[in-house]
Each structure stands twice: as structure tokens, then as C-alpha cells.
Length: 175
Image (cartoon, rainbow, N blue to C red):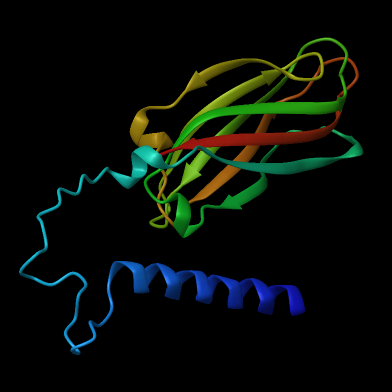
């Protein structure tokens, strides 16, 4: 706490010294700093804040590392927070802990709106540990999310020989 107090005190002294140099009162009691009479016009350039935002990521575990994959709808549902409203699901990747044998694990990411409408936003295929390929993206409107939407993780097919185990999905949302 002493370091914070010292740092704050130093900042106050530094600020006061800089203000005294730039402005302050004359010996006769008149203000010698910036006034409306000597203020110049400044141009302020603004930028669309969404162009400055970085992508946001959500990672979710669907199956534990030692749990064999099974098919099913809504294996996991992810709630879209207010901060991601208007963002677009731009990319998704999946990984399994132990790769399956013969075939692939297929999954879809489905956007469910607060009104209850569902649309496929993304589909993925995993054959050997990590996502081999995105097998398709939904339309832009299907991938653009609003606060309160759910992203549902559905596993539509599993390896036909030995099922993979453990499943994680990471989703990238762009402004």
C-alpha cells in the first residue's frame, strides 16, 4: 500500500508542477493559462470502435478427455454475452484428446436466437486429433450473433471404428 500511496503522491506533485508551468495565476491575480481568447481550434478524428476491437475467443469442453464421443444435439450450449453482440462467428476449430479410428467426428455449431429460431453457423470434421477442415460456414446472418443467443454444439457423426475421446471446441468471433 505504501508503494501505491507514494506513486499516487508523486503523480499529484508531477501534475501540479506541469499545470503551474502551463497556467496558474500572475502576481496581480490574473489567470495566465488557457482562456477562450487564446484557445485554438483542434481537429479530432474519430474511428469506428468496432474496427479497433480484436477478435474474441470462446473455448468449451464438450467431452472429458476420457469420455468416448457420442452423437447428440446440444452436447453443450454457449451463451453469447452482451460484449459479443453484433460479432460474427468467423472461425471454429475442434480437437479430440484421443483420435478415433475409421471415419470422422462431424459436428455443427448452431445459432439459436432468443426467439427460438435455429440456423447452422459452422460445421467441422475431425479425423486425426485436430480439425481437418471446416466443412462449411452458414450465411453471414446465421453467423452474426446477438446478446442472449446460444451457440449449440451438436455432434452429428462419430468414427465408425473406435470413437474418439475428449472434445474441445474454440470459436473465434470477429467484430
